[in-house]
Structure formats: C-alpha cells, structure tokens
Length: 485
Image 1 (cartoon, rainbow, N blue to C red):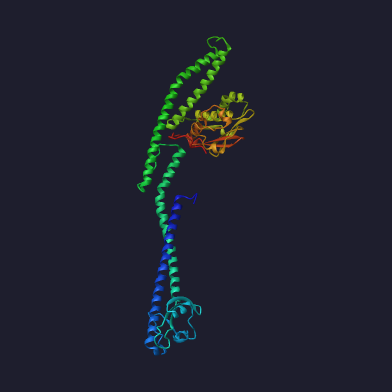
Image 2 (cartoon, rainbow, N blue to C red; image 1 turned 120 degrees about the vertical axis):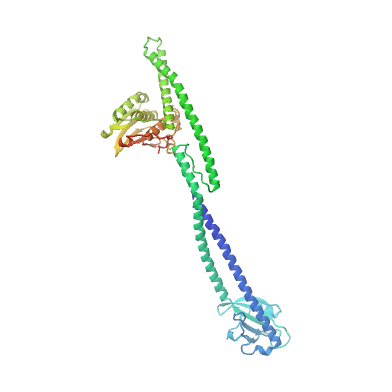
C-alpha cells in the first residue's frame, strides 16, 4: 500500500480485519451446524437400526407386516432394508418402492459384525446409510444385517441457506465495519492533517512564531503537537538572537567602513595632493571598491533583518520606471563591461509610470541585473523587460548564463542559499540577493518566479500589483523565500 494515506491504510486494515473475523466465524458456524445436524441424523439412524434389529429377533413375523418399517422417527422419513446373511431381502420399507438401498463396504463390514455409516446416493439424491449386524439367534434375518437410510438433501439445503445468510451478514458487517472505521479514522486523522497543514504553512512561510493546534484527543497527537510547539519556540528564540546579532554587528561595522570608504576615495582622487607612487592610488581604489562591496553586503543584511522583524517600511511614490531601469543599468554597466556582458532593456510604453517604493524597486533591479551579469559568461547578455498584464506590472530580467538546475530553483530565494557548481563557486556572493528581491516583492504584494534551463540561461520575473493595489501598503511580519515559486 505504498503511497496511500494513513487513513486509507487504516480503513483497509479495519475492513480486512472484519472480513477475516466474519470468514472465521462463518466457516466455524457452518462446521458446527453441519456437525450437529449430521450427529443428530446419525443418532436417529442408529436408534432405528437397533429397534429393527431387536424386532427381527423378538418378533420376526412383524417385519413383514404392512407398514411395520414405515414409522418415522423425529419427523424424519427413514428407509429400512433387512437382509439375511446372504444379502437377500427379508423386509423393506414400502416407501422405497422398486428402489434398492446401495450396497457399499459398510454392508460387508456389518456382515462381519461391525456397524458403520456411509454416504451414498439414491436416484441422484444424497443419502446417509447406517448398517448394523443382526444377532444370529432366530428368524429369517438371523445373522443378517439391517440397513437404515435417510436423505441428507434437507441438511444440504439448510447449510446452503446458512451459507447465504452468513455471506449476507458478512457483507453487512464489512460495510458497517468500513463505515465505522472510516468515521473513527477520520476523527483520529483530522488532528494529524491539521498538524501537517500547520507545519507545511510554517515550512512555506518560515514563520517560526506560528504555533500548531494542540488537540485534546487523541492524547498522543496532543503530546506531539506540544513537543513541536516547544521546538518552534526554541527555534524562534534562536532566530531572534541571530537577527539581533546581525543587526548589531552590521551597525558596528558601518561606522568604520564609511571612514574607510571616504578616506580611500580622497586618496584615490588625490584631493590633498599627490600620494606619490601610482601603486598607492591603485591600492586606494581597490580599498574603496572592497569597502563599497562590504557596505552593500552590510546594508543587505540590515534590510533583511528589518524585513524579518516586520520593521521595513515602504514609501510608495509615483515615478518613471523606465528612468529607474536606466539608472540601475548605469550602476551595473562597469561590472558588465569588465565581464564582457551586454546589457539590454525593453520597457513597454504603458509600464513607465508606476506607484511603488522607488528605493525597493531600484534594489530589486540592481540585485537581479548584477546576478545576471555575475553568472553570464563573456559574450552573453542580460535583458530587462517590463510590461503591464492587466493591473499587474511584470518585470523580467533574463540572461544567457549558466542556468540553474531544476532541483536548485526552489531553494533560491531563501537567505544565504546559493547554487553549488564549478562556475558559481568561482563567483563571490552570500546568497542574499534573490532573498532580498523576493522579500521586497512580497512587501509590495507581489511575487518572484524563477525560470531556468541549465546551460541556457535564467529568467527571473517579478510581478507587482497595480498602483491602486499598493496605495496603502502595510508591512506584515514575514520570513523570506515564501514568494518564490
């Protein structure tokens, strides 16, 4: 039953158990009834044979009297034949007419002094025969045998009807058992489904502040829910400490970094006079670039911490999206030229004026374009397009880079998640770029979608709602990555 749900397995197991119980009961009942009915018949045959044997010794003349052997016992018609020692008929029941009782091994056994039963047929009708010896004292049947037989058709009919009744009762029991098992299983599994649904929501949103419902019954599921809630509480405390540490550390690092960036820029431009050796200028430029990169990383961490804590406030404004794209392309152009990557853009005429947080949109564009340039080999291109689809603005950043394996696409958009490959390992990065893009899109009520073919390139689509949809933006407390699909 691999792949079936727990409820289906429990229902099937319950039905199988009921079916097995009914089968055992039915077979047992039929055997008991059959044994009782055959035992009763055997007693009747034996009793009648003893009476006839005694009569043949005590009053042999009576045997040949009309109707002497026709007396039914217990309401059952018994057929009787009395044979002498040479198996010649001495007397017989008139009900037999011209029919003769079958002669089987039991006859020879009775002539040898041993009584016995045998099952046979008479004109196609099943019968039970009992053969008993007659004492060799007096009379024409002395030393002979008495055969007493009775039809067993009524027993077979009774057993057949009993079998049908047991099958009907079994079917009713299986249906009733299945319905009862389904009802009880549904009640038992419902808390598990609720736990599963809550756990899936927590896994999808990453919100460790959520708690699972703790059902009172069954007790074991309630204990499991409480244990999982304790684990979530511990995880939430751990993540809160992590966020505070990152925020505090980032704030502490920004002050000296700003000084490093400022002083290195002064030295690079020789504002207070020549620094002498040209290598010092090159070193100052490298210090300035590295400081700028590190400051950008710290700003990303701070933004991430604010978003996770629900403290990132959007400031919607009306602006020209096309100008923002051109500005973002200018900021990344130096990196693109150094990597030999061509930058392109195509903004639909109706997609220029939008209402959104301009700084957040700029951050989205820079992160996506930079990612495209970073993972596109020399000679490739990165293209930014935008168009309106109904009331939604669709931004797409496509590259002709190395692409992403399908198994890795779903992980991207989580903080610090990166794709591991020979090409990507050679590129610096922290895995915060797409996570920040996903979070900023989500704060606008939008989503991020990644489409990629390994070895051919990647397209990241950002869907932002229309101006009316974001006129009043509320900043919910969210975790990252839940907008990635």
